[in-house]
Structures are given as structure tokens and as C-alpha cells.
Amino acid sequence: MKAEQLKKAKSILIYGYGVEGQSTEKFLTHHFPNLQIHIFDDHREEFSRITDLNTFDFIFRSPGVPIRKLQNIPAEKITSQTEFFLENISEEERRKTVGITGTKGKSTTTKFCQELLQNAGKNVAIAGNFGVPPLDLLPDLPQYDFIIAELSSFQLEFVKQSPHIAIFLNLFPDHLERHKTVDEYFRAKSNLWRHQQEEDVLIVPEKTGLKIDFSWIHARLVLSPPLPKSIFPENSVFRADHFRENLGTIQSLCEILKISEEIVEKTARNFKGLPHRMELFAEKNGVRFVNDSIASNQGASLAAVKFFKNDLGSILLGGRPSGDNWNCLLTFLKDETESLLLLPDGESFDAITQTLRDIQFPEKRILHRQNFEDIVRTGISMTPKGKICLLSPGAKSFDLFADYQERGNTFKSIVLSA
Image: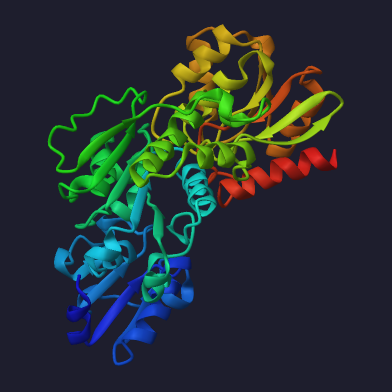
């Protein structure tokens, strides 16, 4: 949707009043003072009184609102922050944009990209999932050298404009409760580069293993090698294969932007990462505790398990199912590690225990407690000295917690208070 269309509108609806919805209201109130703005949110009683969505000229849909809730609304009347942002910047401004998507690693890669560009003397802003809502940046775009946008499948679902540089990290089955199939999930992600032009760039790790046909793309395709292990400190979790593959895309970006290798090395040496992502936060009685609560599907958990492998003493699994099955992760834990499984009650419990029976996982290595605190305390007492107790659930948090941050912080709190 173009801004000119909004100028002709009389009333619009903001559907979803979280961080992005509130940002949308602020932006529209300031830039379109004559527009009647209405708010609707299924989860907030004070904004749930609107009954006919067809009465509005346009609807700004927040990422958490699935399109099925707007199935009777003409598509041309629906937009979002990401769509409006990309469709209303100039070509010069679009060429400042770097879009990053993938199932896992988006935020870490975005932070690494931000720090690296800042180390190169660039003025950088972050928008999207990790950062501020895009419309917060729109008035001040001229002051930035680069806008890095971390974008989820929910944000990319219907965009019709792509950033100048797109980075696609990986794809695992996820969000299938929303997208229904992996193909539909991928199609949403692919909007990041679907509308690129010949002078644009798509960067993809060369070792992703993705069997994807990129022959139809208009942009230049760059396959990025992983960063070498030696570039990170000896004890850094960023020596893990999946981190090095993801962050290798930023080295390829540096080559495109003609940023020196010394800047890459400096950034890697000092990179601390983000909370809840293979975060070593405590060591007690010879046991190290790692919070990887962001791992909300089995592929992400498997990556962590493969990195720690022989050092892994126990792993806490479970939560709301993400759409894939547990066989690959649990088989690897059975055959390649001696770790204990820590299982609380939850929506994934039956599926996990059925898979454990199917693969004949040793019962002596399975520890079950009804609630989360009890299973964490069991992990504290039962993890062998010299090993790691890992929270890497392989499932979403919503059966017990508001989000992965609350789950991770609860894990840390229990461990630190024990």
C-alpha cells in the first residue's frame, strides 16, 4: 500500500495491539492526523468490541494475526508494517536495506551484522523482530547507512517489495500451526527475495543442505562459506557449525561492501551473542548450565546437542509441538551421547515418550517430573560433574510460559537460586 492511498482513506483498523500495533498507531496519528484510527485485538477485552471488519478502508495486520481471521476482507485492503515500510521507501533507501530470515539464527546473525558494520564505522539501525518496528525508522532513514531488518515468516507473508540484500539462513519445519505445510512456510520466507531485481543480492550459506531451486531468482546468488573456527575464542559457542554457517553470510556481505577481513576478525573475537541462545550462565559443583530456550524446534536442539555432544550430561526437552517429530533428535541423543533426558509434563510429553519407546531409549536415562521447577532441580542434582545441563527444549514455550524468554529466565532463576 502506498502512502497516497492512506491520504484518501477515512478510517483504518489496526488489528493487533502489541508492540507493532502501538507503533503503527503512533506513526499514523503523527503522519495522517485526519485519519480515523480504530483498534481491534482478540486478546484484549478493551479492544475486542468491533464486529464488522469490512467497515474500514484499510486494515494494518500485526504479525501475530493469521490471514484466516481476515478471509472475507479483500486482499487490497490489508497491509502490515513491513509491507508499508518496504513499499514507501525510495530506491536509494531500499538499497540501504539488508533483510535477514531463516528458521533459526536470525537474531544472532542480525546482532553480529550490526556490530560488524558499526566496527566498520557505519551508522546502523535494526528493525523487525529484533529491533524496533520498521515504521519507527521511516522518518529518520536519511541518517542511516544501513537498515538491518530481521523478518519472520509472519512479517514476510504478503510483502510485495524485497530489500536490496537478502540473507536466507536455513529452513526447518516450524510454525506449521500457522502455515500448515513446509512449502507454505518456505513461500512466506521467500518473499524476502522474490521481488528482488538484477542488481540485488541473495546470500545463502553453502552448507545449509537446502534442496531449493534458486534458478528462478532475479538477484545475484552468493553462496557463503562458514566462518573458520579459529576466528572465535577457544571457549566460544560460536565455534558451533550452525553459528559459523549463519555468520559466514555476514562475511560474504562484507566482501560485497568491501569491508576488510580485519573488521570481521575483530567482531568475532569480541562477539557475546544474545541471551537464551546456547548461553552459558552458571557453573555449580562442577556442572555447567546452558540456556538455549530459543530452540523451539528439534532441528535447533539437535544443533546444540551436536556441538556439546560428549560434554552433555543432561538435556531438558518439551513444550508445545512445533510441527516436526522427535525421532532424529532422540535417536542422536540415544546413540551419540550418554546424557540424561529431563522431561516435565507438557503438550509434547506423550509424543516424546512414544518416540522413546519406539527407538528403545534406555529407561535409566529418562527422568520425569510433573512440573518445570522439579525437573530443573532434578537436573541440578543428577547431572554428572564435569558435564553440561542444557535447556534446549525442541518445542515452543506456550504450554507453560508466555514466551521463550520467560522459560529461559525461569530456568536461570531456579539454577541460580539452588
